[in-house]
Image 1 (cartoon, rainbow, N blue to C red):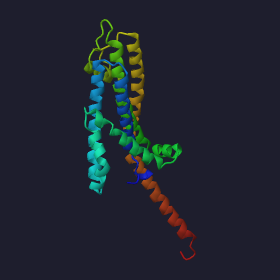
Image 2 (spheres, rainbow, N blue to C red; image 1 turned 135 degrees about the vertical axis):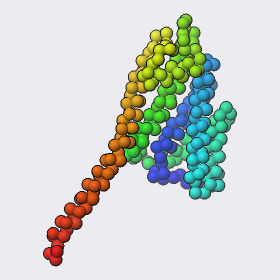
Image 3 (tube, one colour; image 1 turned 180 degrees about the horizontal axis):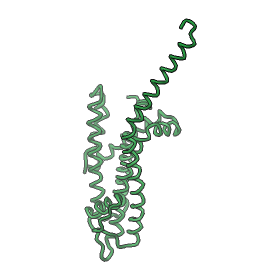
Amino acid sequence: MSAPGPERLALYDLFTLGLSGYVLGAMAATAVLPLGPESRKVLGAADNVVCLVFLVDFIRNLVRAERKMEYLRWGWLDLAASIPTVDALRFARVARIVRVARVLRGFRCAQRLGAFILGKRAGAAFWGVALLSFLVLVFSSVAILEVERDAPGASILTAADAVWWAYTTISTVGYGDRVPVTTEGRVIAALLMTVGVGLFGTFTGYVAKSFLQPAESADASVIRALELRIARLEDGASDPAA
């Protein structure tokens, strides 16, 4: 089956590509790094979330496919990649990376890909913030558990505590019920708060643009209509028979 052209690429495809890369990286980290049991719980929960996203993507692609049986010839890999807890099936996510990589080949150079993304800046901002927020939330939860688990007086000891702390910190709410007690943990918290300000600022800009865009489109339509009327009037004035 031939790879779709550049016009078929969607920003959502790049989002799922990022999630696929994250899953493979998380699998490698779990196999190589001496992570604690609570850190592994965080990664397991994150993997379940990714599987849910992949399942929704599979259903979406199946519904939109004109030839469903032809899609299922390779689409079954998407379904296999959305099954959690089975390590062997997780490698089916490599197929997602390969497929999107084939689409990216249609752009032939990073400049065209950059122009494609810049042409859809609002959507790129949304999917970029969504992917980065997910990655930062997972990595900061694992990091805080690793640096705090053996510290005297630590209050972030479970996967649930870590995710709750990371979410309240990245959103800059900071309830203070869970706080890091180590120097490394405070550095992680400072970085997380800094990243959170940038992420929520970008998301706020996206929301504001989504409200303003209809009005801007209406104004542009009025301007184009006026330009057409002026051009017709000028054509009529230049016609001797008029």
